[in-house]
Structures are given as structure tokens and as C-alpha cells.
Length: 98
Ligand code: FES
Image (tube, rainbow, N blue to C red):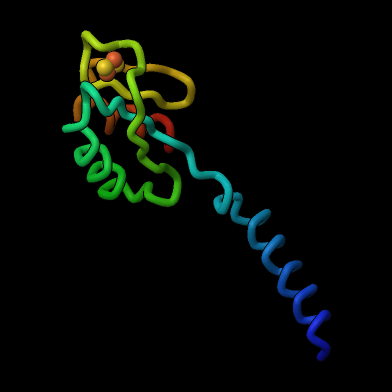
């Protein structure tokens, strides 16, 4: 089999896999305000791991999200959440990924 044909078939297989799973490019971001909520970053990472959502969500530390009076502050799916804690995060993620 020629090298070009192998590359073509490999690419085709990859595209088929991506479209079939819908996961390869579906990672969402959970942004956490670093200035006021840095202590919540490892909590969120642990919750995501315990819920088996590491393929779906990545955690990113950000600058101020504008809700400084209510830490922990996160942004998920274009919504800002204040007063976030582990229990609220679990509830939110269970609703987002039923
Ligand atoms: S410093 Fe965290 S929301 Fe402003």
C-alpha cells in the first residue's frame, strides 16, 4: 500500500472517529477567578476527576470575572457563578452532563 494511501485512510479514519464520538473537540472550559478563588482550583479539578468528566471539561484560571464579593467565582457556559463550593459545583455539573 502506498504511503499516500495510508495517510489518506488514516485521516479518513480519524475524521470518522471524531465525528462518531463528538468528543475530540468538545472540551468545555470551567474558568475560575485566580485573584479571589485560587483555592477553589484544586477543588474543581478534583470534582471533575471524581465525576469522570476530565474528557469534557478543562479548568482554566482567569483574571477577575467581576463578582469579587462572592468567591469562589467561576464562569461556565457564558454564565458567572458566585459563592461556588464543592456541593454547588457537583450539582451544576450533574445538570450540565446528565
Ligand atoms: S477578583 Fe475574583 S471575581 Fe473579581
